[in-house]
Length: 364
Image 1 (cartoon, rainbow, N blue to C red):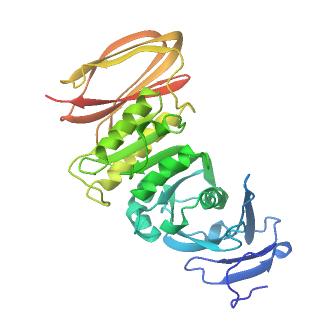
Image 2 (cartoon, rainbow, N blue to C red):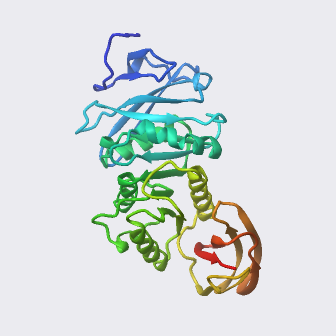
Image 3 (cartoon, helix red, strand yellow):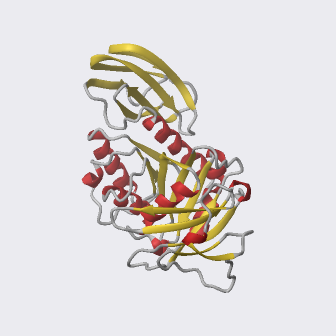
């Protein structure tokens, strides 16, 4: 039955959820009353994990899913939440298709910022990259909430579990690194944007498996810490990219912000395309020189066994300016031209069993 006077809570198998605008009805129903025979009216999804949390989502059928941004309260039936709701600020891209395999970008705002603010900032990213954006309120960044909501969103919006990424700015950026370090959820890509590094050491994250795009503004007070963290992770063979942003400080948004995030998403996609994100096994003698370069550089490496190799190069705006695929390579040496203006470039070498990246600087 429908009861528009009931508050939104979860108790035992009761399900209460307030739909986002334009869905303003509050639904109060027993689990046994929800039809699960595929008639297209409603569905019930449960997410559970080792910690025992359960998230119940009542969603409309595909015909009622709309592409817009909105806030929705999701109840969580797990101590210490005990049916409390958590506010998510969502954006669905115009091209969202519930029958497709979709991408999720979970956003963690900085201190003093609202989830809806970060959602609005990431809306252009959502539309450009065709990904679902879901942002949490600052005071909702508990370890147990994040995996519970991620698990729920994967089911709710037909998210491909291989494309669940975590973004955070400032304190939220530090949260991205810490949550990944604690392995609370199997995120496939991490974007810490100007993360606060207080109390964090450069070597704390050398074990991270998902690719990391560390975004650091040149005038951010933690810029040197970001570089040190990148250097340590890169030396440990992690798939990591230092996305240095000139002329900016510890603020978002700014002109070009969307392009910076899209550059990170491109890097993550390239890093996981083979399902391997660590340094390739059996790779020795990897060099890209000179660096800084003057119009061209030489790439060389040796592999213990012949492998297929893909080489890609992006400029600072995320544009792919070079790509080659080589078959059966073992000893490799090649001169590569770098067109365009001076600046930072990302080189990616992808083999059958791993990926390695290196930043290059062009100065003419």
